[in-house]
Structure formats: C-alpha cells, structure tokens
Image (cartoon, rainbow, N blue to C red):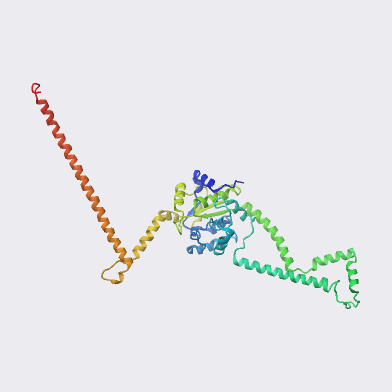
Length: 426
C-alpha cells in the first residue's frame, strides 16, 4: 500500500517525472468520448472533475452544451459509479458539505467529501468504490422514497405490536374474556389461565407447535424486509469482492497537476494488471474550457512540462474517441486565439457608420469608425517613421562610403610626394 503523500511532495515528483502529467486520451470535451465502448471494455467507474469540465468555475449548474452527453454518461454506468471529485465542493473549503449537497442535486450523482485536495485524496476514492463508505442519499427522489419506506415500516411495526397485544394479553391467558369457550367449556378464570400458561408443555406438542409455527406463521412485511436485508448483506459481500478485484476507473479532468496525477495515484492503490491491455486506470484530459482564464499560468507550466503529449502504450485509446482529429483542431486554436476570434466576430457584426444614414449614428459604429481612423493614422505614422529611418540610414551609409573613397584617393598622393623629395630637401 503506497504512502499518503502531501500535494507538494506529489507535485515535486511530477516535475522530475513529467510523463506522469501526460493523459491517455486528450479530447476537447467529454462529448467526444465513447463511454458505452469504455463500459463494454471493462471500465466500471468514473471519477470526474467539476470546474471547467462539467460546470463553469464556482458554479453548480451543468454547462448547457454538456447536458445530453452527461445523461449518456449516467446511463452507461450503474447508479453511484459516477463520482464527482472537486477541490471546490466537498473539500475542506466546503465545511458541512453544503456545496457538495447542492452540486449533487444539480448533477444527479454523488460528490465525494474529502479532507485533502486532489491529488492526495486518492485513498478516499478507493473505499467508496469498494463499498466501504456509506451509500449517499443526496438525491431528493431517494430521500423521499427512503422516508416513505421508513414510515411504512414504522406503521407495520405498530400494527404488529397491537396485534400481538390483543392476541397475547387481551384475548390471551391474562385478560381473556370470562365467557364460555367455543368447545363449551367454562372459562377457568384469571388464576386458572395463568396456571395453564405456566404448565410444562409435552415434548411431542413442542415439536408439533414448532413445525406449525415455521410453516404456517404469518409472514409480515417486516419479516420479509429483514430477510431481504440478510440476503443483501451476502450479495454486498460478493459485490465488495468483485469491486476489489475488478475495479477499473476512468479519471476525467482539465488539469494535469491534479486530475492526471490523481489517475496515477489511484493506479497505485489497485492491483497491478497482468498485461498492459488490462490497465486499471485511464486518464482523459479535456482541452476546450468554458472559462480559459482560470489558472492560466499553471496551465502554461503544465503544458510546458508535459510538452502537450499523451502517454504511449500498447493500447490505442484513440478508438474510444468519436473524432480523433478534434484534439489537434482544438490545440491549434489556443485560448488566446479563440478570444481574438470572438472579439473579431463581435467587431464584424457591428454595422458600418454611414454619414448619410442617421440610423447608424449609434455609439458602437461611431467608436468603431473612430478606432479605424485612428488605426489608419497610426499605421501611416508608423510607415512614415520606418521609411524616414530607412532613408536616413541609407544617406548615412552613402556618406560613409564617399568618405572612405576620398581617403583612399588622398593617401597615395601624399606617399608619392614624400618619395619625390631629395635628401637635401629633406
């Protein structure tokens, strides 16, 4: 069992081992992942991030373009096998788990309560999928159904107590009615009934009564529920064993330092596969962010360390992606480029200012026209400055060449004059 390391130590290890930051699959959004095929391949659990993966940062409502694919994810896996693990909801920043409760109601799936942030919370995730943590009851429908079942059990128990009281006390040997019995015998009275109740029962009658009680005893709903619980305990034990042996997890997130490292930490707590094709944990990174401004510096560092590469192995995880080329398209258009194209689209949608049409005399076209004129003026100034600089530099170079030529012409004449002088003249 690996040690539970703190986040600074885990991040330091990832800096020296940047291959841990590389995901198995990189897609723009979870809409490009074939979860049905992954479920058929043997993966039975999902750990997914919240911010910038399912919702906007610091929001609990599901991101609108992902509603359809999210319903497909919940339908592909069994109830409770899709777990949301977030550092904003359910962590130490969420005392009492109020934000986790609200997020669970919005997404329709459990949210993990963990004391340490990702990726050091890996030891808290494994017990949940191995059924060593209590089942969450955060959905309103589950709360209502369990409350109605509890109320029904209480009412049945009350009816059972009343029935036994009437049978054993009011109509029994203690307070039975002092009338003649059905066979025509006189009621012996209270003292006689007490003596009959305390009299020893013959062994033959005991065996007969016990057999009758086992075969003809009324089966109440309470007894049936108890038997179901006993059977469910046996089933849960088998389920625990199967989950411990065959647990295979899909980790989805947008951050390398948290989600991809979390996938590596989870793999350390699971048995090693016999071959690479039976990989226990795979990691999926989403690159098309609803809000790319969050943690921009850290994302830049993560991309530099990982070199924007994915893990290389014997399994081609690209076959579980609907559009394998979608990731390359998303990477070509970086967040800054996407923002520029958004601004350009808004500018192009503004109508041009027409001095003859007063309907276009609105603030947006006027500001845009002034900006264009200022841009043209600035462009002219820059071009004029560059041209003047080049002309001045060319003039300086030409003057220097003339001076060099003049110097080279004057020097030989001086040497010749020196040679023509006689020693007497000197």
